[in-house]
Length: 360
Ligand code: NAI
Ligand code: MG
Image (cartoon, rainbow, N blue to C red; front, side, top):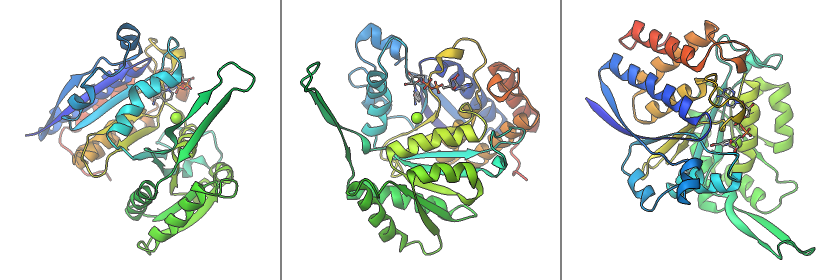
């Protein structure tokens, strides 16, 4: 029996609702297959915890997390704590502390889901986001606060090591997909240092991947291409900020923010990787029992794949797709199903199929 230690950090808003649903489907999957088991430990780190204790991650917290095989994360963000405090208090210390430099964000229109875009059913993208430096390097400062001469700087930091490793990761990923096509996205017309270096290193790395087709697009132009010619894109590699924005657009174009999954990977596996839905706390629907758990299920499938449980991951995605095709949809997708309804439908499908079958 293969055993995986999972650290669950549901945190804020709908995070606890979708993580509970996600763990339920993974437990069901494990029970069906019999080949693996998960041992989950819950960490109460959240904005409520911060308001009580003055910190999100207690001393030694990262050292404890380090012993897990994967981190299953909900969302962080509260109306009682400024967003920059919550993000830098919990999610970024884990992603940066564990050098999870490759943020992988697939977007695809699942069966039965309607894209708001005409021709949107052609969306099948993976956005690879640089996740350790760039615009979110935390480099900057404020001076002369409150005075007319106040100044704030936010310096993007790009290193050769950081840029080269994300490009290699993106090429490796593109190579495994049928289209073998990688689009470089930067803003190297206006930003002539770091962004030009991104472009240069991309083409250096490209020489090692002659089987991968490449093209490049400025970040503003790629938004129009995503909307007008979705089928011309396959894998996109972009900086921390640019890919953050593009992946919300990708999720919305593929039907809902409640669908998009993400993996924060430390590809060298020196540290655990972190898996989370791309959405945030969703204050407007917290506690109503209607959060779409599909993003978290897809996220769980990515986590299983990372753990080497490919058959289980495929089985889970087949279940999710059967359920979206059957129109068991939460309100964000125009339906009236609850989080519990969708979760039950996925678990029922998993139990009915029991043994894993290859997806047809
Ligand atoms: P959000 O993703 O929480 O919500 C945007 C809209 O999408 C809302 O109308 C919400 O109801 C809807 N939505 C999101 N997830 C959904 C789901 N699973 N099912 C159905 N509808 C869903 O983004 P927003 O409003 O910008 O941010 C709210 C809080 O979350 C902020 O504090 C923000 O900082 C935080 N946040 C945290 C993230 C993280 O932990 N990685 C990512 C994005 C935002
Ligand atoms: Mg975002």
